[in-house]
Every structure is written in structure tokens, then in C-alpha cells.
Image 1: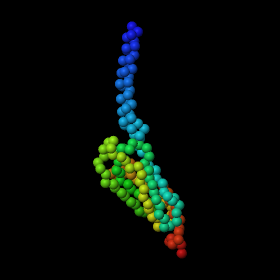
Image 2: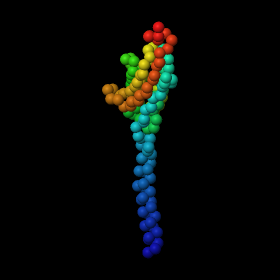
Image 3: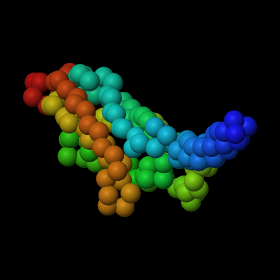
Image 4: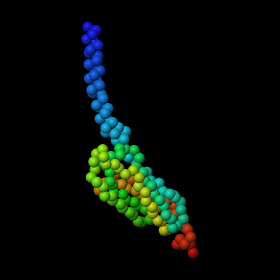
Length: 150
């Protein structure tokens, strides 16, 4: 009888492994924690400047899977806070799961001609749907030759 108990335990362990390991591998293949939606951050440099000011903006996608289909090849829209906007659409290959990689960094510069406080907004879009958004503030102070300086 004890010999059968040992065999039964081995069979139970083997069956457990067959059930647990594939589930763990499936969760890992699905990205585990990386399957979460990436977060978007936006930084300006400098954040305070004198007009006319050239400001560089860097947006970063952090977290999530590198092959996240929702974030693959988005339209990038910038709202500059000075009543101007910019839009960029990339020419990307069709999405392939496990092969296509999302862009993690977007860098652009913008010239602010007049003084003021500007809220800059970045939108990542798929069609009309906003999939990511971030914003930051820039202060532009009157500089030499700014309107109202004379």
C-alpha cells in the first residue's frame, strides 16, 4: 500500500506541473506586468525662458509591452498653448505581434515668439481615439525686442 501512495503522489505532482507551468508560461508570454498600458510623460527644457524662446520637448512612454498594438505607430499631436498646433503621422509597417516595437521617445522643439504662460499638450492618437496624453507648462518672459519692450 505505501508503494501505491508514493506513485499517487508522483502522479499528482506531475499533473499539477502540467497545469501550473503552462499557465505561468502563458502569463509570461502575455507580458506579465508589461501588459499594462504605458504611461506618457512630457518635459520641457527650459521651462522658463525669454522671448523669443526655443524650447525642446521630450515625451517618454514608460512601462507596458514593447509590442503594444494600441501604441504602435500613433498620430502625434502637439498643442503649443500659443494658438498653434503640429501633427505628425509616421509611415509604419503593418503591426506584427511580438515583432513590431512601439516608439518610446518623442522629441521636438518649438519657438515661442511672445511672452506668456503656455500649457503644452501632447496627444497620441489612433484615428479619433486619444490613447495617451501628457502636458507641461512653459513660462516665457519678455526679452529684448519683445512686443511692449519699447
